[in-house]
Amino acid sequence: MTEIRNNWTKEEISEIYNSPILDLMYRGATVHREFHDSQEVQVCTLLSIKTGGCPEDCSYCPQAARYHTDVKVEKLMDVDEVLKSALEAKESGSTRFCMGAAWREVRDNKDFDKVIDMVKGVSTMGMEVCCTLGMLTPTQAEKLKDAGLYAYNHNLDTSEEHYDKVITTRTYDDRLETLDNVRKANISVCSGGIIGMGESHGDRIGMLHTLVNMEAHPESVPVNALVPVEGTPLADQPRVSVWEMVRMIATARIIMPKAMVRLSAGRVRMNTEEQALCFLAGANSIFAGDKLLTTPNPEVNADKEMFQILNLKPRASFKNGDGVKVKFEQIPSAI
Image (tube, rainbow, N blue to C red):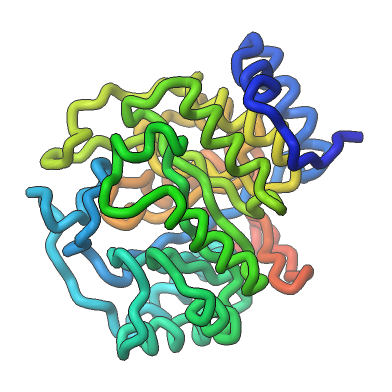
């Protein structure tokens, strides 16, 4: 029986991460099967409810106001428009709906009131409702929880040591404080990172070390491969190989066995075979739809075909510890 631990050393994580790739995949697959149904993959939808104009300087992000990208600044969407998108996502097979706003932090104003109404609306649909809105205060986290928020995404992005080479407009401690506020509000924590931003393997291990040694492991760990965007400082970064993704996914799976490990940004550059390696290593979630906020994502039909080839089925929502199991064949337009 695999032990759940919160006292991993960097040396222990490094030994796992750097083990022979086939052995690492086998170990990841074994732990995955101990805690999860290997044929289940959760299908999530991520919608940008407020796009562009962000004051932050995250080097990877086309939504930063200071960079010259093709992203157009848009105001916060109307509640009814968001709820319509959520319903379409559900009908397409998604069981988790995440709303992202290009804000540095949440402010107590009419926009936040609208987000609260969005959360209330989506939470009645039987999907896990998630938000990623920037930094949160304890009071704001409580308000979101009361509205029915299931999960909050706030990625660490990279290691503490590499962080200021990617972002200077907020600190690593700011990130950790928001995650602490989310946890104290009894909201499910979604936090992972991005590889391919010029970091070392040690930085990747360092980020995993921070996540795994939290008081409780994040329930959700997105593993993103950088999607370089013209106009951002990281536009010329080389593509991350599938083997680097596999190492991150398998290591995350082994040290955080119960977490949903999400194959996130960068999937658009992967073929079915490469994604299959990630599922085998321990990934059990994808984001569906043609965009992840503002970056490209595989088309719905391509994902549907992949699910059929790999004999995968959508995992149901598990809000409040339960949820109605969804059968793949019952959703004609399912991912």
